[in-house]
Amino acid sequence: MELLSPAGNLEKLKTVYLFGADAAYIGIRNFSLRQKADNFHQEEYDEIKKIKGGKKLYGALNIYFHHADLQNLETHIDYLSEYPFDAFIVSDLGIIDILQKHFPETRLHLSTQANCINLEAAKVYKRLGFSRIILGRETPLDEIKRIKDALPDIELECFVHGAMCLAYSGRCFLSRYMADRSANQGLCAHSCRWEYRVRDSLVLEEAERPGEYYPIEESDGFTTIMSSKDLCMIDHLKELRDAGIDSVKIEGRMKSAYYAAVITRAYRKHLDALCDENPPSREDLDFYRGELFKVSHREFSTGFFFGKDEIESPNLSERLQTHQFLGSVGNEISLGNEVSVGDEVPNEEPHVYSRRFTLNLKNKIRTGEELEFIGPDLPLAKTRDYRVLDKEGRPLEEVNHTESCAIEIDLPLKPGYLIRRLPHDGELKGR
Image (tube, helix red, strand yellow):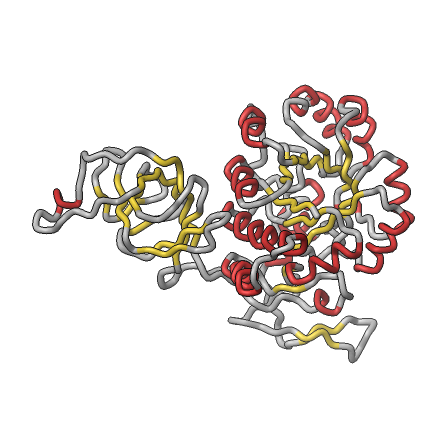
């Protein structure tokens, strides 16, 4: 099965390719359902062409188009043609003719927003020219198998990890009502994730159903009754393959490069284990599975694949996360002798480090704290033995994410590896 990962910007695109994605999906500004992601614009297609290589790239044009949006799309055809897209992800059937006219060789993938969850609908979309259906998240495994058995030449894709929506695959008006941001235009405020207070009682009762109570569990006086659990299918990839899934998809174009890397790597290892004659040990697979719990997530569930009981109960926890993402390793640079530890501590023999790299920081690093490094094939390396340098090569006690810096270290790092640490007191709080 293809492993398909999210990329909200160039950094994330490079990261998911590096950490094992076969394909990535991106949005183009003004035409994508994740408008709050950075999305792609200007001349970023030049960089994409350099890094794509033999990987696949899918462009999400999955908003629902008003007439003005259609006109805007027509004026951007030349711009879209600069991107090396292997397929377009489409929700609104109104743009099919436009895309088929201007991009006859580019495949069409039906977005999950179109809510295709049954065989008869799949037949219709196949006749319209779609080569792949991204199934609605509500599709159970037995229905997936029924579609694939009847239409073996159409590709089926499904989400296997990430956020689930309170509404039917995103068709929700809560955000528009509460925050004036339409989910169907890519501006969802995730109002269902907010915390709410229920006055005077810990149950909800609907007027036409007296005596039927919806229990409310509160924490600090608030509840999250509309917040759905996150999806995690890493333990059930074989069942998906046997049902006929061709591509497994990770949600998260608005999430960090760290999130995308850790989740992509874990699913890569488990997918490879399905095919390898000499699969990784159970211990190794359990390690990568355990990494899923270290990035920001809510309670995990298997969604609707095996029924709806799990997903019908709300997420009751705050956002769960064990580590803070600090940044990534940049290019390796030659070691110089312009500064040594001995300059600062004359009575000590200077430690000569074997490697030096630039750093791309997202959070502060304080010298001496334990850092953790992860890579596509570096499960985990921890150390306190390193030094951070400013752009003139002088040692720093701490460095902020806005500052240019480098690190000297003895670990076998490579560009693109990620850096994290355990949180300090008071960090990683919030929903």
